[in-house]
Length: 395
Ligand SMILES: [Zn+2]
Ligand SMILES: [Zn+2]
Image (cartoon, rainbow, N blue to C red; front, side, top):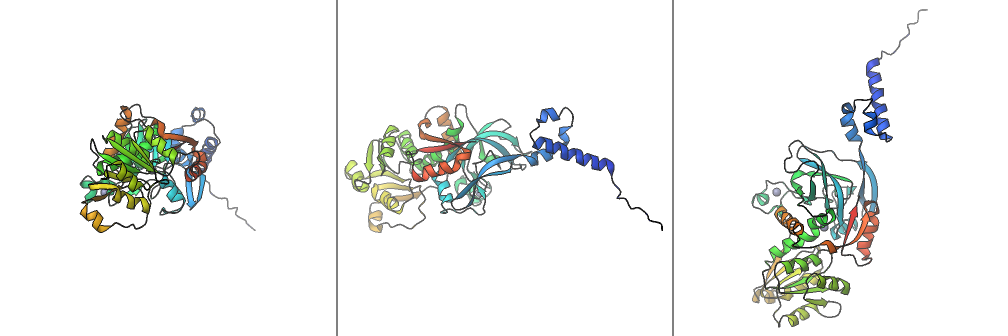
């Protein structure tokens, strides 16, 4: 009997190359320093493999109230994107709304966080507005640049608007890839954590002040002296308001508001804020009243707090219906206005104002946590542990 031995035909050079490649990747994965390896192996050949292998930590939400620190791939960068190595991130009530299930991301898991600043690590081939190594603040929206609203200077209400940390992966990670047009080069002298806050907690009230058209000599009421409202007080002062009435139920927040420019404090636990505002303004009410909380009660109160012809401005998200006394509102010729996000123009202005020391938000950072402590930071904000003004995270 003649048995023919069938040996598999091996492409020996290819097999050796593959084993070699896997071995190199394994060594790198095990932490062998690339410069050591590069002495014996042409590492350039493995560049794309190496990039695909890079891992990072990200605080991701998997379901309401379920946030975990996950080991995930560093995102890849499209031709119009930048990869940012995050240096500081903010913890915002909007993040809590997502964690508590009031706002639902289109997919789970999603990396949380919309406030952040960092250093450009990589740019796509078509990117020209920033370069590798640039410090940047992040505009928390991805906008299309082509819809009717983008074309008419209202990118804050873009038809295709997507938010970091909601529809898009967020900032609570070591790296984030995002459209280059959302990376704003930082002017000198703005620390990363202040830049992170600027992108939401400061620029939101800045935008609100422009919507409310606060002018020198105006009287202003600010409902809610928390992480956003306190900057509302500070900016009302910066915009020239002569009287700034801060309203809150937390006396310590009111005292903090006084430090940044509130002229009168109203504790709504102790007195009716509308009556107090009338009393403090000679019975008339204020030129502009802002709602930074997101409650039906206070949304109704701002409308009643303005004088004839005054402007009531909604900023907080309540998600409910509220009532207006139609005749009272009509006969006093009042206006109700709303804010939505902000424009990059406003963010650039806010960063420049911080850079030149015209506004100082250094005192706004009350607690600092590591990214790995994201759950503790969320709990501190939720339970108001140690009266946080603004909490920041660091990788
Ligand atoms: Zn925010
Ligand atoms: Zn658009």
